[in-house]
Length: 172
Image (cartoon, rainbow, N blue to C red; front, side, top):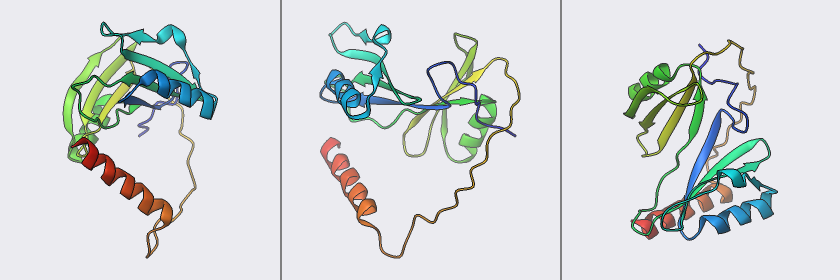
């Protein structure tokens, strides 16, 4: 059974991510624009009552990064991946079977979409979107089968682990 809907709405992919920025979403947007040739869709920039940015979208290649400012009393937050799927209920069931907590049952959303949410065991909040009607198209298969682990962790691996530990200690 297909899980991923390959026909997400224009400007979005099957998987998009939301970044909650401590210390200035506007600066983050500028950084992404400069470093990755990203383009903010300024029509979607939404300031909140306190002049922080509550929503913005940046296109990088064929991907969309959603961005917001973290409020002063908000903790450091995990990722919020957004995934377009063929059957949101099936994905919720699979997630629950793997230890996730269902946050939002499949519900009608706008734009001909259904929405559902779950929190994975690592506290990421996943947003599932399903078109109310869709056509069946086969998924392309990836043949990549690379062993990314070795007996001794690489510099790239250990620097990531160190950075994550520092973030945890900084924001706990």
